[in-house]
Image 1: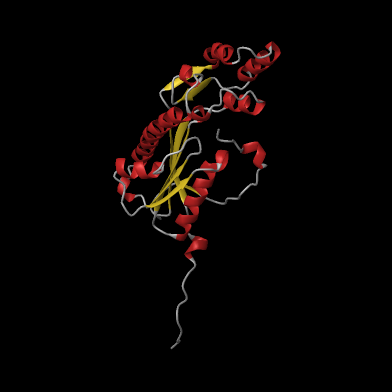
Image 2: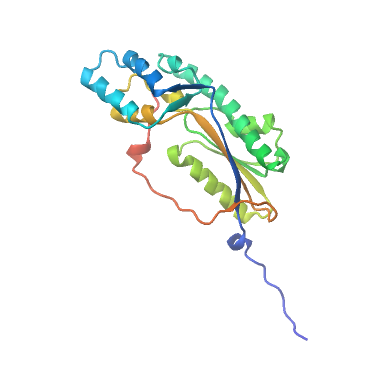
Length: 243
């Protein structure tokens, strides 16, 4: 007869994390590039003609056929206070976040109460409590759900949120997570900034929301998360200053 004792298994190393589904939600306002060009004439009035022509070419060559926004395009190009723009952001971010999370849950028939971890991602507005707090109440999520708001990571925030969810699920078998990204660059659009970086961001960025559901449940079917890595960026190229 053999004598001995069992050793614990490192589940962190072997736990399979899967992306179950993704969903998107666009805001109600939108316009084509052709519809934006007349607004550029109003915005850039008084600038050098060559500069105006260059910016129009930038918009026309951006390959963006339609831009979506949380406010009417005319409102985007209207001078208002930071408070007014941020109030619109708060209202619309909550609505977009709720719609996209609900859409993702319905795609896979998950009960909102089955979520164990919620990550919200946004850097184009300020709200306290953060977006996840509002979604917990509106969606009637569990009161003991683990929360993580990601607010200042710019373009890489959505991917970072997914990585945070993956790490949590690897360490906790049989759990589910939702990552909700809501961004509204129109809320931070700077009318008095005529730098090329502001022009490029105005030409290529639009508003919207996305949601990814992940799981470490063995019975949940989805795309397995294989690996991840962090890429360091040049800070000056991805930053903006609040003014």
